[in-house]
Image 1 (cartoon, helix red, strand yellow):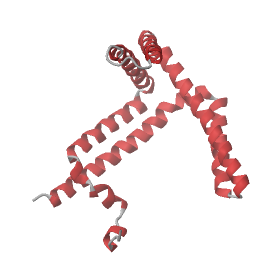
Image 2 (cartoon, helix red, strand yellow):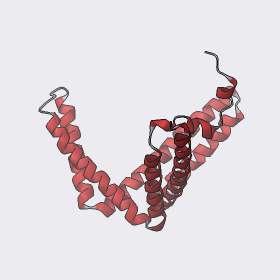
Image 3 (tube, helix red, strand yellow):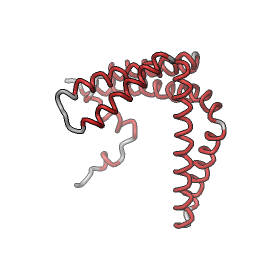
Image 4 (spheres, one colour):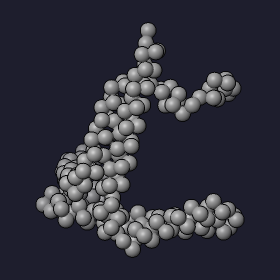
Length: 194
């Protein structure tokens, strides 16, 4: 397939806006505003926002477990596994809804510890690849990932305390980016309108 010169020299903004006709610009704007509000909530009321999100997750698990029980009457394959997953979802949902604050601490601590172990694993893989292929870039990535993972595992409570602020920062940047792209999509849609 031969590409024309204009297709090869598109800027990232042109590539993003190239498919602007697939969705209405205002939908992206609403999504950006919603994302920005969530980011501001993370930064201004981190404990309340995290507790709210974990509580919503608990409600989702509870309702999902109840609906999964309903599917057992329709599809009886792998009945044992499905019943086990239903029970786990329902119990987790009830526990989170009964104890939202402690559930938030537990879920976030588990999440941080999981990320710490995962970062150590990824770091070890990059270091192994660096030593076998004599690749300094992989070695630096591996070392940084390993240090990050160890820091998370040594200080999980500090990481849990910082997590809402990091998430808030990323969410604010993402919200602003989506808002900017939505206005670009509006211009692109207006330019292609008949």
